[in-house]
Length: 200
Image (cartoon, rainbow, N blue to C red; front, side, top):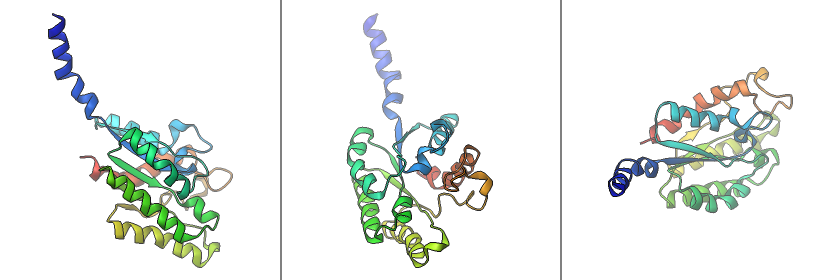
């Protein structure tokens, strides 16, 4: 009887557990849920949406407030090994831009993360960012870097992560940088079209 039960579990219960796939989100405070509860941040809402639609994916959100592309690059290898993600969402660069770090360095880091992720078989989504106009030509080159990388790597690009809320001050916290909880579903809806085609 025990053998029969074991074989039943092996055949009918094990495959779904093994089939579960991971979406790894590597971002900064905009994805970590700064100033709101973690479960209110868009990666958590993405996890709920996947469950509601009975899609065999879960989200591992490794976003850290203040993270730069260099920091993300240094953390990526162990994350890929630990989670073996099917999809990697790279949502980094905002802090590079706000600190005025060299764009060549940011490009190199983003390219390296894309290549490292693809080497494991993961698919990529790159989330672009924009800087305030007062950053001048640097802001133009900053945004162009994401476009150029996505084009050269043939990766899906979310042109501007905060596009659906950027022009609505009431959807930002008092620092005028981080979206409030009410903004997170809008961000998710904006991101979803880039992720949905990869859920195969």
